Amino acid sequence: MTQGITVTTPDTDNLPDPGPALEHADRLLRHADPLTEGMWSRMAARLMRCALERAVDRHWHQARPEVIACPIIKMRILMLETALGRASARDAYTLWSSLSDATHPHPYELAPTGGELRRWHDEVAQLVRQLAAVSGPAAGRAE
Image (tube, rainbow, N blue to C red):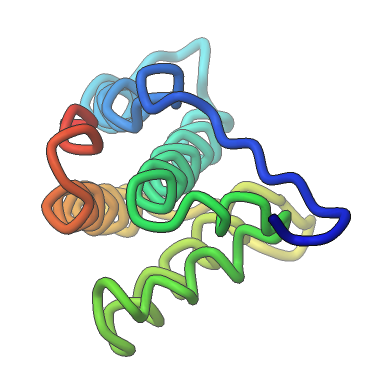
């Protein structure tokens, strides 16, 4: 036992599933609703970022539960280098960063386009599959 540090991790069954967030984002991308005009693109980006973060946490819960204690999601994503390789971990971080930027609007920035959102959605879905494959069957339930 490490002196003064207690690491508690949630049960895998209680970890949020990235699948529903991705499905809702996909629904927003496919079906325009006049009531969500001006909001749907940022909401889709937020759902995709949520799915990415959930997949990362599921991976670390399976591979090295103590990593979940790291409060900075950027670090948990960059540490994916051990599972996915340096380039893929950096791509995952770049994707997360792009989604984060899209969810924090600034008056001088345009909202992401439908094409950007669709590409990000596909990249998040691929990352969820990759992490489920390297994490084992418990994390595989994310799909």
